[in-house]
Length: 445
Image (cartoon, rainbow, N blue to C red; front, side, top):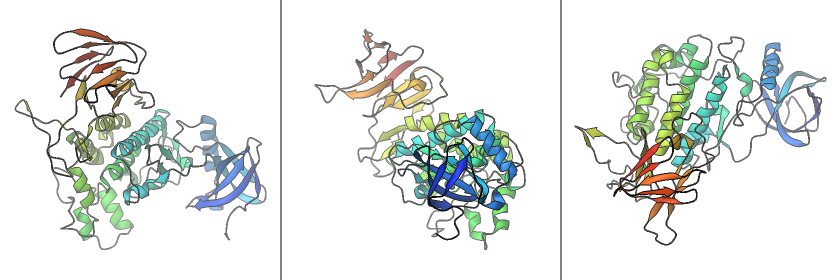
């Protein structure tokens, strides 16, 4: 391809002294070009900046990021600086993105099929990655579709373009963000920060779960030219949430009122499906959070909300995932609404209350450290401590199997008590209480 900054087979030098052999061009953007490369005997990616972008401040920032190291493996983090005497500028080496990861733009455009549990896993992993970054005193500055990728089978994520990461509130970078994801104060000229990252994260999570933009509703009908002036007004000067309970001037419109679908019709359909606690979190982010940055949900609060959403999934007999959203009126627990897909009244599975948490016990449910050991901000889903399992000889009986290393104590509805040793199961039965240690669970049906 003509016009490339580097040529296949060309060797560039790295700060570590390990040569880097350039391969094929993978893509280009506003800052530079990305190539496949061979570095240290393995395949990596090499980003090379356009001359006008190769500034000393960028190089110094990259050196600092390389020295600090990646907050988590979810980041395609800069690993080594690269230079070539015969080519202006510089670049950096990073991990090569696995082919199974696809851009989030495929999700929101309807080109990606993904199960509800994998989608929520992806939202959790993205939020955990941002929290790890923020706890280091860094901010990402430019969270958007273009720099997050998802494995649709498992919900794992990768975050690229990490050369834009800076220390919180550092003003040196030319990068303020992507319009539509930037916080209102950044649109109006303030320096990006951890707090503005929280707005960008909420916008991306909304896109992932509701397949729409939280600020693009009725007001889109009056916009004649989608230019910088219109975007500054919609996203910076006068942003209004499409589900603002007190301001309907920018409300989401269904496809009957807006056949183009630009005014939040898809988001409106999903808004009716998801539980109230999730709607409340986004309402907080895009009402008070639009006006007062410190009122935005933190990444830890998003983790708790998303973990609760994951725990609330149950399947209708038609196979469609629904969300358990207990509603109490005059002290009476109301029946769950009909399935949003088939319209039939649902048959709920067993569920277990663990402190304030309620987990639906589907045939494939697993419980983890944050369920059974009290408060745990890691939300690590890599090692289960319990799982729902079918009885080996009676397919109509189900139990909760102890996958940990310590015994549980189960108290049955009749008052009898039994130990549940590692590898054994407690039967799923109404009013069974299980002492897991610091946490006690109560099974309901």
